[in-house]
Length: 205
Image (cartoon, rainbow, N blue to C red; front, side, top):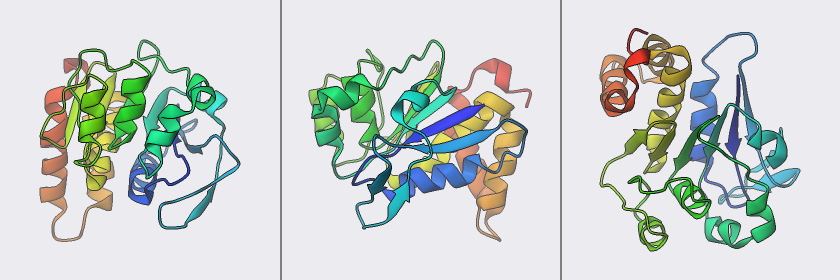
């Protein structure tokens, strides 16, 4: 199981790294979570340089692809050559997007008539792309999910784990990362946000 987190120049650290940290709570042979970028290194909105683990070609073949957000997302979607490298397909992959990453999925035509979540700054750009934006942190339909607000990345990660490994695994991962003394509250909040969007087949854990 390969999960690629698309991370571009100007990326938001919270989007890429929170998801990466939670997803790596699953300890199974073959489970791999990668930072995927169009260049060997990318610099965050706060100057943190990270080394790409895979390129966009390998990311496009991943089982799960999450699109992080950042300051330069409008430049990303305007880059025809870069966008052409993103060969994503919800028929064969789980796809998720965080904040302005939702704009990437919208411009790739992967949201269709699905309503989506995004951050407040990106909302008008997503709406201009023809996508209705919801006033909530997370939504998913079928194999496509979107989240709005930096800390909603936890819901995106929990959704991926629930879809792939079941709700018990998602609860376990969230319990591990939640603050001491607030673990039950954090787990229940996460599950309350993702459970309505999960297929019935995942609910047995």
